[in-house]
Image (cartoon, rainbow, N blue to C red; front, top):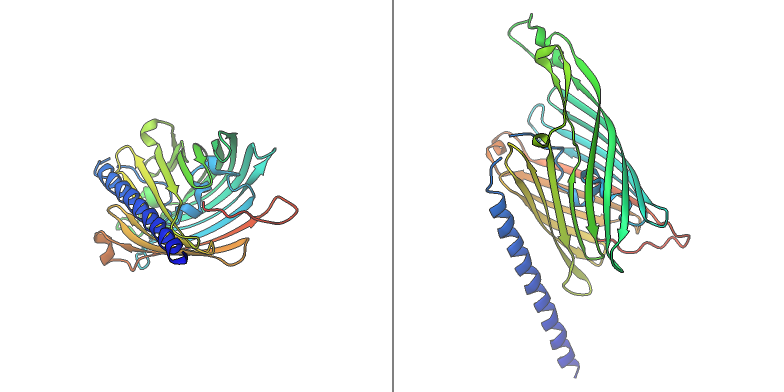
Length: 329
């Protein structure tokens, strides 16, 4: 009798694994096909651990963890290349008004070459209960970005070049919006985090340019699902697709495994750019630590030794009991 029960249990596990692998394979093929489309603009800040830093990508994510949640991220991209991007973000968000509203704030500091950006944003999400476990949220974001171009750091052949005769800094506004749907096992989001393209026109004396047209929008599409493989192991396929007019559509295709609701480990392939490995451990029920490493798969791999990213998250329960329900995203 015991052997029969074990055999039935093992068959269920195998069927769940085959079903998960089949869906993951279909998703990967679909995304690879989509990413063959060509488009020439720069993207917003890039994150490998996007699944642990969702609110910075989508303002509608605010409050979706049903607790006060803080996340910090540090990314050192293309180590060994002078002027390569370095990015730090901090976000804090939580639900209010019987969880119908989510509020959040986020901070960004980024440097690429002689360009420095420091941004502060506020987030608002209105959340609708669509089913017993499902919520649909609409989010808005508004904030300010301090931009600085350190032109005096540029080495030029013409010392009298007016374009590089002084540093330029400007404070500019920006805004974004997003849509986010989730249940206990599934999530999907669409967002345009920055609706305004801000840049400093060095040719015209450092004038600031703010362009609000759809041709400058950067679109983000995310999604994921959690499968039970066994009582101790869960699989989570995920993706993030980034698109912009004039730029190559890029997708991160990710598969992660979750062990005993304590430890995440996963692999990511970023089309035309990198292959990554990441891990996150729940140090306590409230504190989590993550790390990822990217191996560059294009011609830039000759000039750098990869990319490192670290995340730190902390959750504060809203209930007085202090009990946190398991969160998969």
